[in-house]
Amino acid sequence: MAMAGFYRRVLPSPPAVDFASSEGKQLFLEAIQGGTMEGFYRLISFFQTQSEPAYCGLASLSMVLNALAIDPGRKWKVNILTSFAYSGKNVCYKLLKFCSDEFTLRLSQIVTIYCVGPWRWFDESMLDCCEPLKKVKEKGISFGKLICLAHCAGAKVEAFRTNQSTIDDFRKSLIRCSSSDDCHLISCYHRGIFKQTGTGHFSPIGGYHAGRDMALILDVARFKYPPHWVPLSLLWEAMDSIDIETGQRRGFMLISTPHREPGLLYTLSCKHESWVDTARYLMEDVPNLVKSKDFKDIDNVLSVVFASLPSNFGEFIKWVAEVRRQEDGDNSLSQEEKGRLAVKEEVLKQVQKTSLFKHVAAFLSTVNSCCRNMPSLGHKDDPPDVAAIMCCQGAEILAGKFGSSERFCCWETCVQCLKTDGDKPILVVSVTVADGGSQQGFDVLVPSIQMEDRGCSSSNCIRMYPAGNDILTVLLLALPTETWSGIKDEKLSQEIHNLVSTENLPTFLQEEVLHLRRQLHLLKRCQENKVDEDLAAPHM
Image (cartoon, rainbow, N blue to C red):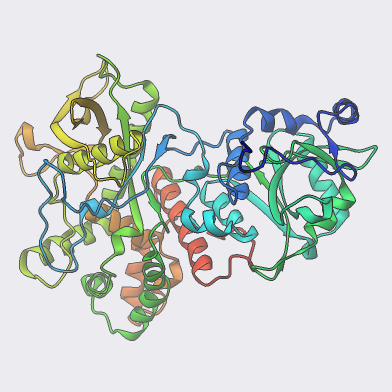
């Protein structure tokens, strides 16, 4: 019986030279002697084949990010990015209770899980900041949006279309990257120029042969074509083609280690289509509201901004939670886990020490106690319940049952403080989930802050997060500074400027805020369909 589908393709040669052929091996050895294969070793160590026909851009980027040892700050396999607006069907744990008015910001809407497994590692499924994965799977990704993803992942990117560069500049860039292991080049080209099947494609370039003026393409569609050498002039011609989806020429990007690491505690997401409305509100409506109103004080400003928040606002900004499997008989945390949790807690402390946080918290406290027409954003939710939801969904995904009628349910939830030698206690929500006769244990590492006021008893002195007030504070800090330029009262304008200025923020919080601001800027480009027109890095 004939087997359906294809088993690889025959590489058209010429013009390409198979890397594993005698000629290909000789080119490799000669390029090594020329010193232009240094980048190859890192790339080949972290090579991955694209998992979907249209994932060539995502596979190329995740391969380069891993080769550069850029820490995603989240765990790989499986990665979940969801809002946990849980339906309540087929579950046996207590559901969260929320007030019913439309402005309520639910804790379940602002939690993102990056789980489950011990390794932090970039994977295609984690690259969904600038384009929903479902859309990429159907249509692929454009040159501009892949650049956007690289920025969001924390990399430094220099990108050029062929009409913005020359073949000589391209050659110099390729020599620069192939002569070191701290910079890698991804090419966007048309396969047809090489007589290959297919159209637009992304792949990293693994090396350069100066004598023959040839580039080594590490094709991420390894199931289709092997790595191969091509004349650099022909590669330039393949890049100097029009992408019919954008009407723009293709090109190349140089990706290197970042100036700043990506955020550890907060992130923005375009997974849900509602992000477009929220981005428009934050970047367009808020500045217009500021210009149109005569504000009297800070509370008046917060009232106008918060009252008009889109009801699906929580789908846009996410609080990153870390979930891990419970090891057999071992409930301790590694030094790395403790260090990462300590950084999250330090960010929270720094948020709460800002003057803006004090205004936000006081305003929300007043509103929640006296008014039903404003968002209830204070810390009134129950992290153990949210942890139960997170772990149940994590278990479903690991078991391959996510979205099916078979559901895991919470068997037991326990909040505990793990005490380690010489360290402060670490707050962990331990959850046991069940599916028929099987049970699995998970831990959710929860940032916590010791409360110092109101003479609280020992059982109430630890506050768990996330909470609406810290998230809204960080988001306000992340808005572009020109957002508030329309305030008419000079004294109030100066007061707002002092509150939202990032210049004097502590290092961790400043990096967190600038990461969100960079994401917001890039997502605004995506919303306006300008990401393929403006390839420059966002200026913060």
